[in-house]
Each structure stands twice: as structure tokens, then as C-alpha cells.
Image (cartoon, rainbow, N blue to C red; front, side, top):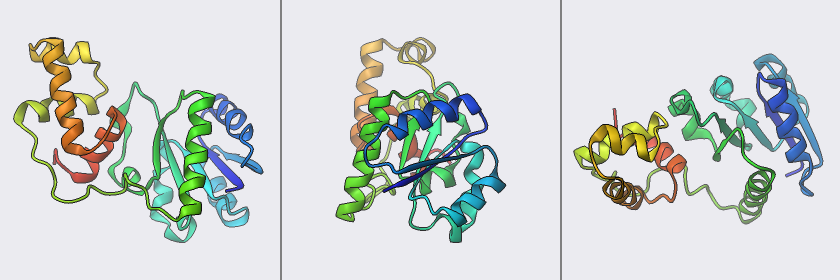
Length: 195
């Protein structure tokens, strides 16, 4: 992986992400765009291997000739998880918070590079095996996770104790074969459990 493209409509966000990404030793060049047309030109001309993008750019996925053989990292505002698009989640290699730290960016870039060298497929691309059956309460909790609600908010509004809510979360994570909230939301969307 040598070239990276950062797609965001917010110039401050682009600047921060570019600064973090360019510090990685495996990155040769960081490009950026604030609109779809500029992004398409860069994808055709410069052929970046890794693309960081916000959900507003998900329409790029509709152009397979531009997006094949590239890793996409979906940058999500943690305060607005409902902005996730199911098609974008299916296509991306990873989901990351927009306000992630330098260390988180470095870890992600290196893990994607290692996976590409090994030729491994993303473990998060599809739900493996049968789609898990979630209880009614677990479905309620998953719906609130998708909305970005905190543990305290979920406990209060479902009228359950915080330890009980955490137990439900552990069971959901176990059934979905994930280790955190973001991957749980992504897997639920991929599996169309709530549709």
C-alpha cells in the first residue's frame, strides 16, 4: 500500500486525517478530495490502494470500475451512526471513528497492509454461517446501538439495570462474533437482522 485517498467534505477533517495517515512509514503519498467528481478523477489517474471516506461518498461504490482492488475505510461520526449505508458497510474493509487517534490510524493501516500481503479476506465482510437469532430484548438493544445510544441511556430507557444491559451486550457480541459496538452494528446491517 503506498497511495491513500482521503474523501471528506470537511477540510479540517481532511487535514487531520492526512496528517495522521502521512506519518505512517508504509504510505508514499496522501491525496484528498471534497467532492465525488474530484474523487473519481483521482481514483482513475493516481490509483490509490487505500481510501478513507465518509458516508456521503458511498455513491462511489456504485462504480465498480473505480473501486475494484481497493481497501475502503468508512469514517463514521460516532454521534450519528444512523448515517451508515448498508451497501457502503458491505463494501468497506473497515469502519473507523472520524475522531480516531493517530495510533488507531497507524494500527488500521498496518493491519490492512498485512492482510493484503497475506491475501486474507476481511473477517467483517459477511456474516459467516447461519444468521444468529437474537431475542426481542437483544434486538431492542441492537436498535439502540445503531442509534449510537450509551450504555446508561439504554439501561434507563429499557428499564433494566446496567449490569443486565452489559450481559445482553456480551451475548449479542458473542452471537454476532464481534468484539465491539461498531463491528456489531456493521454485522447487524450486513445480516439485515432488523429489516
